[in-house]
Image (cartoon, rainbow, N blue to C red):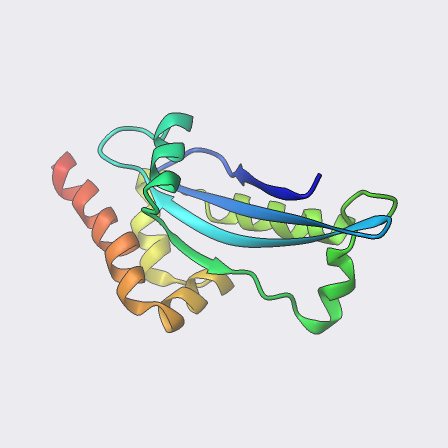
Length: 142
């Protein structure tokens, strides 16, 4: 089971995903993950376009950093991920999936931990891989 897997939130103009890394530790596993968002091109997001964007590294991403009190929940219990970890990932995926009408305002507001961190740590990528792409979508549809 060692390896990496990708899971995505609902496919939309702004589509979130998690790159999940699983490492065997004796009888249990450690689970770490990176979070990312992809802006759909001029067509609706599909699984194929999602795979292409990930393959081309055309997304905004951030390595997840667990708060100290959360770290024990990244270790499986009876080989299953904790409810806290599942909830944390699910919340990210659902919170960052935005349709056309909401995507640009959501990205500009940047009110989530992920967006705040990306804006602070990766301002150039934030502008190029998120805001500029959303602006391009609006221009193409006008």
